[in-house]
Length: 380
Image (cartoon, rainbow, N blue to C red; front, side, top):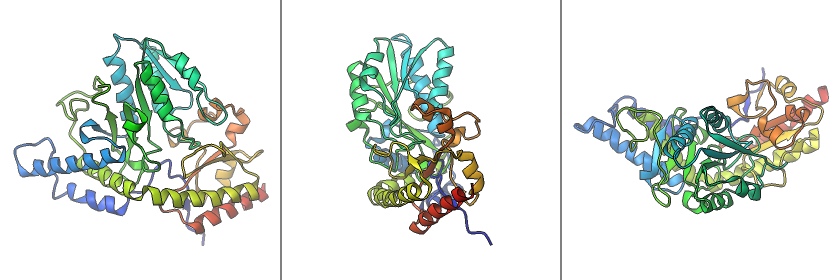
């Protein structure tokens, strides 16, 4: 009888925490009211639940509830931020700056705007995935309305100098958007300390439900204006119309609360496990870690084993759930755009593997993973 599979793809998604599920369940049945119904107790109960969840979620990123807009997930949040700003500030300029290693939700949205007459500047990164800040400074013009940079890369786990980027963006009078989808719940975030004006994230990355996300929208210094993508009813401070997903929002709030409480302890434990696994992979398989000496998310290991395609290892290790990169582009035959932008050759990019650990990863699992990779390599 085969062993139970080991999940090593927590950057793709996470299981819903039991406490999160328990918090959500009543809002599917007993407390099923519409949060926009203001004339009876069913609506009041739903509205109060959303208000509490908004406070819990806002606290995770160091902001106030009135600056948080609930969405269906980070992809919608990023679309709302980029397209919303492009329409609201088009009279000032039509120039947007972003990085070549951003998530496709950013890159594809920018590509769409480029077809609509906007100018998009894609900045390169170095072998560690870091942008040249002086190049960023020079790229911003009086027509630049938005600069977008992710807090932590979803494939490599590399953390970017967000505070420094924010200072450059604000000095130019532009708006700073940060995709924090992979960072939320893994590292501390404070939008005021880092100078972020718009921040996108998603509940299912930190043990909340899929289909629920949020966008932080700064209300002062500067006050950010957005033209909504979805019209009809004026929900979410007029920025995102539609009946609120109360169970999902309640779940996101609870997941945010738990993540805030457990962040330091959990991150330290996972970082310890990562160190054990990285050591095993290097010693047993000759793995080369990506950006090993740079600051990375505590749970993420990106590596390659020279001469071995990642897809071959995935096929040889069916009991291990890991990936070659982003879940959103895993079906694409092309090599990772992130690795190519970092200067990897196409051959090296096809060797890239991402392992991401999580709250429920055990030391026994980590030990087994190292052995299984070693056995697979020996068979090739």
